[in-house]
Length: 146
Image (cartoon, rainbow, N blue to C red; front, side, top):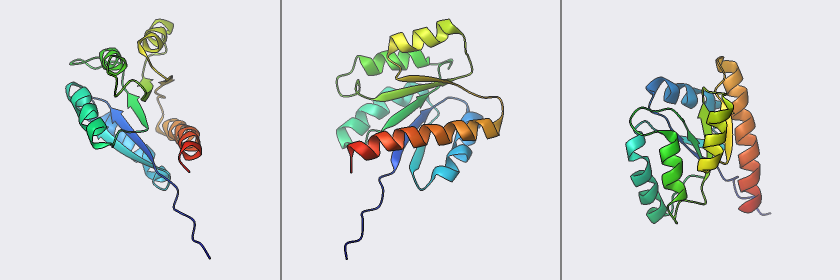
């Protein structure tokens, strides 16, 4: 009898300069531990060097969750840097922002976002949003990497 290989974990990187946002995301991802692994990066200035190092090591995340509004380096600048880099431009970047302003959404897509999600104001709604995100992307990557 052959034992099936364990399901591949979706690798998610959250780039957000707010420690509270990183903590809440970690909490929201806890119930997803059997399908997804979350890594957080709270220094947006370190994002592109970190991603280049991960590319060299062959450990790029499957999906990046990216805050749009960060004071030191904006999410738009990170998106543009990802798009300008050959080893990174294939990455799927989901913007996770507090703004639902159509201009912000349009700017994110023009800069290369794969998707745009508005952060809900209630944690339970965020948990549902994370479950939906993991279900969707896990299905995509599980189909690509059996």
